Image (cartoon, rainbow, N blue to C red; front, side, top):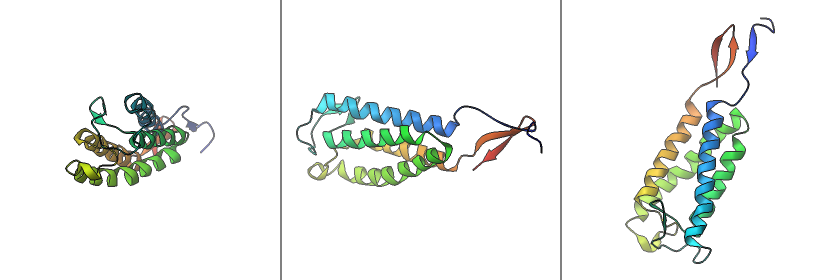
Length: 148
C-alpha cells in the first residue's frame, strides 16, 4: 500500500464531537445552575430546578467537572472513548442512587428528581455509544475502514 492509497481524514470523529457536545452541555448546566442555587446550602435537597432538572451547588459542581472532562477528552478518539467510560462509571450509580433518592428526600444530597434520572439514563446510553461504536478514520481508495 502506498502513501497515495491511504489518506487520513482531517477533523474530529463523531465520538469526539459527541464528547464535546455532552461536555459543553454539562458545563453550561453546571454554570447556569449556580444562577439558580447560589452557593449556599451546598448539599441541600430543595425545590430549585433548572429547566425541570433538580439542582443544588454540589450537583452543579458535578456537572461542571463532567463538562470539563468531556471537553478535554474530546481532543482525541481514544480520550473520547475514555469519556464514554467516565459517563458509564459516574452515571450508572447516579441513576441507581437517583431512582432511590427521589422517594427519600432526607437522603437526597444531590437534589435529584425524575428528570435528572432520565438525563442520567441518556448519559449512560451516550457513554455506551462512545465506547462501542466504531470510528471511520482512514480511507483506502475511498473505502472507509473501522477503527476501534
